[in-house]
Length: 147
Image (cartoon, rainbow, N blue to C red):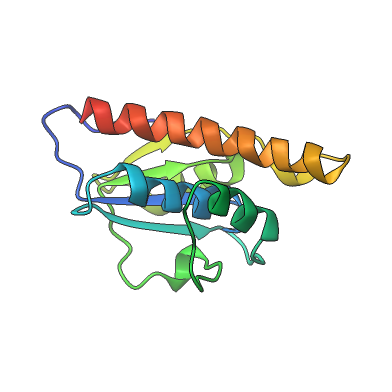
């Protein structure tokens, strides 16, 4: 796992998770609110996914939205080069390491729990999504502050 050196400017970030339905789109929305608008931000999954309505609820609580965005796979990207690829699940990390291979792309692994596996009441499930939101927000604030 390589990280951009302090002198290396990051102009583009790609977030990757399993199905681009929870963690990576959440990270994309948070990044757009935390990082400078000059940074190009996108997110993808390594397999097909469906939009998760709990993500919309959590983002709306924070005044954020995905708009009409739909989950997409890595293969759907027009431009495959990013300065920094941030993976949010082991499956995504393995895929990113294979895809970037010999590229000069920095890849960081930010393991995040999958809130969709939580059982319980609607409130307990939403709390699991809020926890992931806070974890991602913290990591993005740290990224912004180090850059």
